Image (cartoon, rainbow, N blue to C red):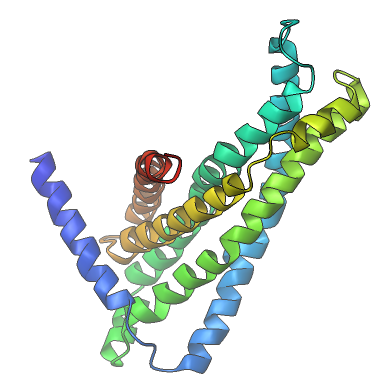
Length: 249
């Protein structure tokens, strides 16, 4: 029963995506909506990204320094380990899991409300491809802006480690910065950016799907928002495993 329901949901999702990825009827309208979505989904997420990144960078620095006590391990390893954690997982995977809660629930509730108030039905009656009109600008906008959020997250997380180094003296600042620079692999930055593009598509498309097919009233909109966040989180973790195997061989 669960397998058949999952297959039916996946099939409906594929049909929905085939409707979304059509050529927009009016490019000017599409452009203006995309700019609005960049502001709503991307720029409005910057404060959350900055705050979380600073605290995660600080916590990683403290925990690395407290646990690296062996005299055989160089003291600058704290900076190097913090950098690797941020580049490989936090600034892309964990960040997108957090954004799935903010951005995903926002999209699902917005489109779900339009469904229960029959605004989507009105678009369909007017001959407009409602899936394309409502969803494609969100997908493209977040896809374009997610690299900015990832780069900001990397920078602010490292600054969080620098802040802890300066204020607490748990590790000398010069050793922490030296550790950040030691054995730096540029591919890890590109690896994080590539993963974030996949995750951004999952967040926007899955949330749009659950919101678009809401049936009922406001209670169902809330359930759709919850289901969207849960499904997005599971898919992000699954794709994270696959991409890690493919990109870090």
